[in-house]
Length: 69
Image (cartoon, rainbow, N blue to C red; front, side):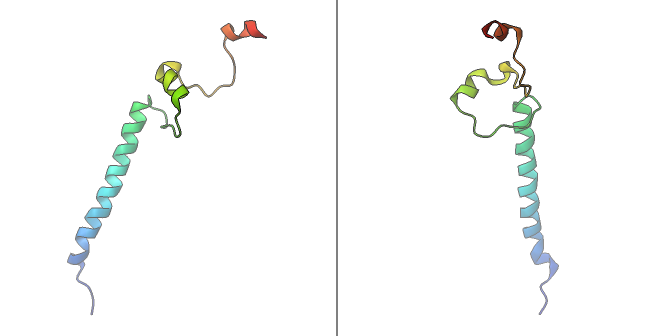
C-alpha cells in the first residue's frame, strides 16, 4: 500500500526549515566575526583581543616586538 505524497510534505518543510535556519545562523556568526569564519573554542584570552586585535593568520611579529630579539 503506497504512501500518498501529501503525507511527506510536512517532513520536507521541517527538513527545509532546519537547513534555512542553519544557513542563517552561519551567516550571522560570519557577520559577527567581521566577515571571517566563526571561531571554535574561544577562551578568555581570545575574548580580550576580539575583533580589535584583527585575528591575523600571519606568524610575522610587528615592529614593536622586534626589540625583544
